[in-house]
Image 1: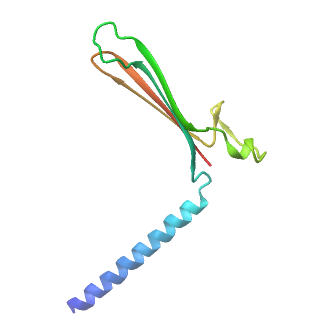
Image 2: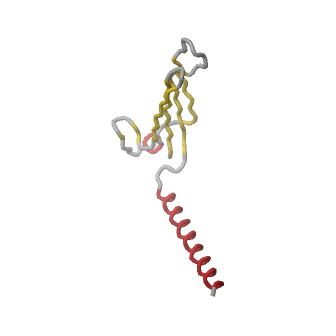
Length: 112
């Protein structure tokens, strides 16, 4: 009796994992922007280590490009979100305070 319960549980968990895997595959297959084509990270604020008269500094690092491939190369129309953000961009803004002063981070990730 206990052996039968264990076998039934194993079958149910296998079915559960199989169904979840199919669900994830289906979701990923239907996503429009699956691959990252570029990112940009921008930091501004009091980024120096010294405590007195610390200057405000701006640093930018990027890799790849943030262009929308559908509209740039393929000639397809793309929707603009909130006036000037492309639909293939994800934007994040963080800020923090330290003993020296405050600083902020902005990040953009582009997908295709």
